[in-house]
Image 1 (cartoon, rainbow, N blue to C red):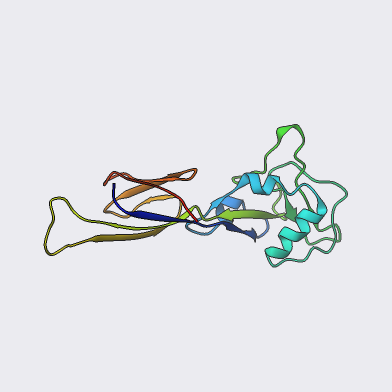
Image 2: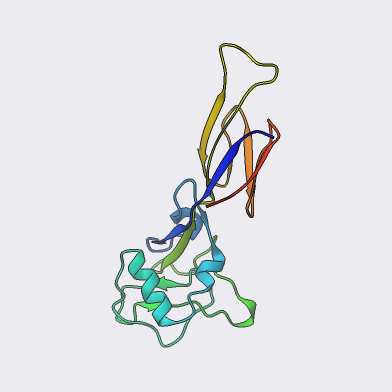
Length: 165
């Protein structure tokens, strides 16, 4: 087992442009979290999240919506609409039914991954290999890594660690 450290990173609320889907809105090294978006089931929760995204709602709709693109802002007087989670509906990361709706997306950064290991057999000119990577999965050209839950695995070197912090 090689020494590896992992630091959990939360994420942020990001408001998309009209018609964008959350998979487009979330920047590199993040992924859309449908569960967080689906949790915005009241106007108060929605307004707090919109504020964290840097947007102030002009007003709110009478009830939530469950179609793709919700929760969202419209720019109208009934500006912001929460998510209606009835019937097991989940907020979509890959669709937005209306081109003028600005989807509110929760973009989570999976982990910051740092670590080092020594080569076996040792190479005198390379006493230690260090790596730093941010995100959910990828291929650096030297090693491939994946994250599932709180376990991160670097596949080419057989390093497995647990997220802490």
